[in-house]
Length: 208
Image 1 (spheres, rainbow, N blue to C red):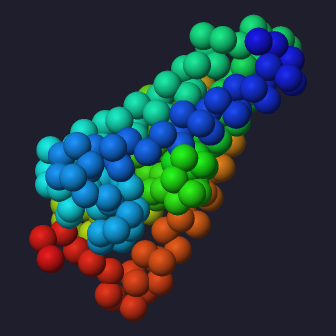
Image 2 (cartoon, one colour):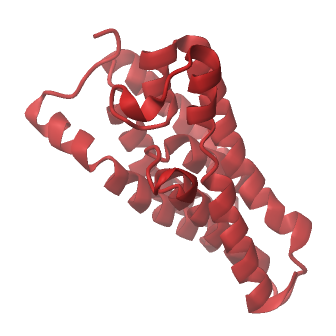
Image 3 (cartoon, rainbow, N blue to C red):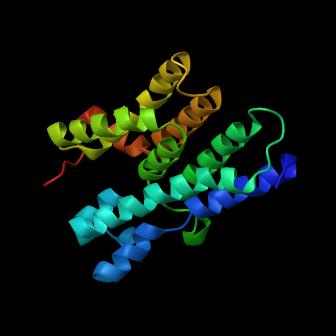
């Protein structure tokens, strides 16, 4: 694949990879339940944890991260390089499409998850240093606050900032910044109900 047509095909494939509803499949296999009918109605790891338990949540998280990783790496496997730097921008667009696919999956009536794990996968494949900083930070905040959305949003909103710093240090590209910014916007919008509850102090915590 090459040029704009090839990039467009890869963006579409990235969306379809991101749209794979692994959380829904895991919950059905693990507990015979439909995540969309329980808890938040989302198909991500947090709702899986509350619905089918830790093992199902961990598997869901890893599969959703894997979607982001595969979507980005797919560009390197299939896209024939054009002008210098173009593959990196195509990979950024594909990564954003994968996050969008997870949030609004065509396979389940354009419902989905919050996009955090898939976004983490795209960053892991594109800017490992950013992922190495942000994933532990987000996990620490979740552990201390017992609030998954707070840790997730903190990591997501800091992603563009950390990536810009890495660009200045010569460890990332501006295409990676575009991925971080685009993914952060999508994930933040998907958390708009969580943000409202965080502001009123009514957001649900782990263990409750």
